[in-house]
Amino acid sequence: MLQIVELLAVISGAIYGVLLARQHKMDFVGVFSLAFIVAFGGGTLRDLFLDRHPLFWIRESHYPIIVFGIAIAAFFILKVPKYSERLLNLPDALGLGFFSIAGADAALDEGTSWFIAAMLGAVTGTFGGVIGDTICNRIPSLFHPSTPLYATCSFVGSWVFILLSQWPVTEKLAAPVAITLIVLFRLAALQRGWKLPALAADAVDGAEARDD
Amino acid sequence: MLQIVELLAVISGAIYGVLLARQHKMDFVGVFSLAFIVAFGGGTLRDLFLDRHPLFWIRESHYPIIVFGIAIAAFFILKVPKYSERLLNLPDALGLGFFSIAGADAALDEGTSWFIAAMLGAVTGTFGGVIGDTICNRIPSLFHPSTPLYATCSFVGSWVFILLSQWPVTEKLAAPVAITLIVLFRLAALQRGWKLPALAADAVDGAEARDD
Amino acid sequence: MLQIVELLAVISGAIYGVLLARQHKMDFVGVFSLAFIVAFGGGTLRDLFLDRHPLFWIRESHYPIIVFGIAIAAFFILKVPKYSERLLNLPDALGLGFFSIAGADAALDEGTSWFIAAMLGAVTGTFGGVIGDTICNRIPSLFHPSTPLYATCSFVGSWVFILLSQWPVTEKLAAPVAITLIVLFRLAALQRGWKLPALAADAVDGAEARDD
Image (cartoon, rainbow over all chains, first blue to last red; front, side, top):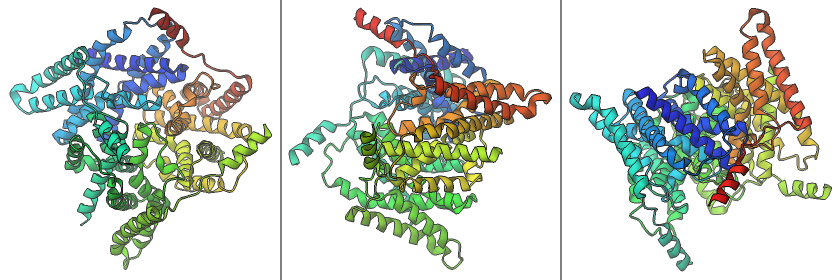
């Protein structure tokens, strides 16, 4: 079960990377690199920060080959159907859920504080996209108030996982409950358009303009 | 004493990150991420390059919580006073001094060459801001001739620290002397507008234009 | 022999970084940082991913000093001759060949799969430039269909190296043959303008425009 979810997480990350590369009219090197970076970037940061080796995509060495296959397939799919982005929402939410909990779990394993475990959960779930956006010369969409809750779902779900895994009674339920929560929270945020407010920069800029 | 300076360094890095995020009208995820990246980015690179684990913000696990608190506080401070950037100069210079010497010291500990220790001092002191600028889609201000000396202060001070720490007589003085030097050097550069010259690209471009 | 090639690889990476910094009219801090990042970025990623310490530029501690010297020299060379980019092609191709094989070899050493070894060969050979481009706020030229084959030469050559090094008869020839192949493949791609096709984004965009 978990293996299928992890595979879905990798695949959905890779597809996000391919779409990003397509927007920038890249060649195969760009398509594969971005698919790889989005799929594995967050987990790589987590493994480097926690000194876990071999990295998960070196250990599970079929993952990079799957991503390579997706990048090749992208060249034979000339027309992306318009509803494809919406089709991606479910695997993407599953990927967010799985990667977040895998990240938080790895951090607890290494004995970090709860706060850092929750943070590394969110980093694992979301920073592949942040690196991909940065390479494509865009400010990460994750950081913008126009994006429905994403890292927030991951952070909240990671906390639920961490707390539930402290008591023997709830320990076994921690992962499935937290992953389900992240998936539903994310899908609801997309559906309802839940967003975080921006830092009130307008007021500040206005004030500065007036003072000058 | 050193702990207070280190704390100031973290806080001033986080505030720089918050100001950067504010300029780009980010939401809380962006504000916290940038505060974190600017405060801890340089030290994280140093720890990864030298294979020092746990990373300093995993070991000192209250630091990320302080940065989280600063990111929350940023939402309640609507109007940034105009002189705030100048108010930041002192903690920022202290942070540069402390992080640089902590970086050079860690490198010497691991037995690197003096040159690499001085370089890692400068990386620790300044690369949080470089990564933050890159994510915000700006060419790092550090690399531009319009910025008063910053990495240079750190590099020079790191060399002073390294040389002083070779002799038993001056060993104990090395850190306070070098930190003080960096702080004063940086404040003087700001005050007097000391800058490095640009690479003479105008001449080259001009020549090229004429030759074409 | 290999030491001379490695040195050429470092030097040619550093010069590429200097030229990049010159285009953006940076000061010495920017020039040295970019020279360093382009020359050592790919190998640093490889060493971090494979947990190899000390990093190669910490072990070979004269390399950073050579790069420092090149960055200083850049300030005394005011006018870059127009054919200089073409002069760089040979050392750059040598650097690509050497770094790629060094990367693939290190990965095989650590027992990764062949696919990952070939990929890390290409990362070692090319990702210094990718990071440099990203810092300079450009989409990596490597990812664009307008660039003659570069990562592709490295990837193909890495595979040749990996396969040849499996049999005792060809083991000793693997490195020289693969490096030669990468160099000739790269020079031919430059000469003939061999490129990878772009992902067919135009068709997609057109379709979307029509459907809207």
